[in-house]
Image 1: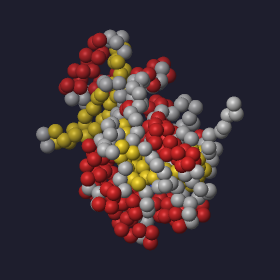
Image 2: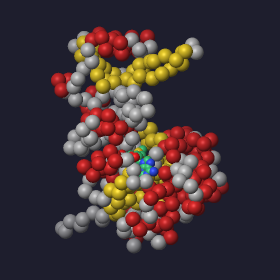
Image 3: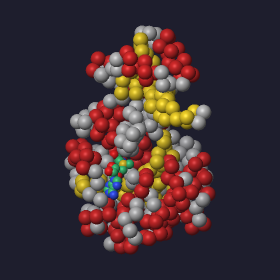
Image 4: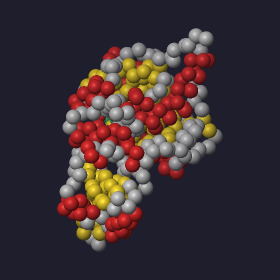
Length: 376
Ligand SMILES: C[S@@+](CC[C@H](N)C(=O)[O-])C[C@H]1O[C@@H](n2cnc3c(N)ncnc32)[C@H](O)[C@@H]1O
């Protein structure tokens, strides 16, 4: 029997960072990627063979974008979804990177090359930012362009030992994507239902409850992804004690119980500033549930994640490494990270988890795109 090659569906990747979305988009081939940050662009190029244009999305024109893409992916920076941009439209100021991306989709549409699938990935906060108006503005811009629009809240913890809830807005035009009649667990969370209820009549008419099955049970814990104890740098005794002293008494007691068990147990921890009795205090927030906390960029004063290992009655602490962060995003060890740990952690803290994108692609995007090819 002749083996037919997979159709090479073309994808454009905006706000591409290290290109993790493209790595998860099974069945699609990224023909063009864009990111403004030189470190991200270098990481993308070190791991992909396609074309990445480094620069501001607002500097791009439709003629820069190749071919007839089936899909455009935008992991737009969360702080940049500004209503001013939505109101000002194409002629508006450089108000939000998302609108710089959307302007390109409109320009492709004018040339008859609009992608039938558009995915926007963002933090879940986009559902409620600007009193919920940012999410409404995006969905309604897509609805006005003739797309059916739906959103899913997907937590990387279903696939990987990292708590990382993220929002995926999926828009399709001219395709029969699988739809449910009503919200479906686990991806149509109460927050998604609340955001749907804030849409206008037009937005609701274009809404789709995309049907995506839940994945099978996760089979890795944080303990499985850690580097060997021999190759990492541990804090000395005083540093470890000072760190643990920042934990609340209940967390200290849990850690002590883990240590006293003699078993190998792992805690993941972040330092955070909390207000207690009117005063700001540094606290170490620990979790011992087998998950890492959500990776975030080490920039802007937020601390790096700590790993505390209890083993044989001993307790040691250190920082999470860039390679461990990459594993927590579902990357194989062959993925080339920047040499600087800070850059590697920034790259991973900003990224989208690969298995989440793969699940979305295999369960929803690819079937919809291939359905159209089959019907053609
Ligand atoms: C949330 S991150 C997306 C990361 C990507 N999904 C990944 O997996 O690595 C947002 C990206 O948008 C880029 N960015 C921010 N403003 C931009 C702009 N005006 N034009 C192009 N890229 C921009 C940032 O450099 C950053 O890499």
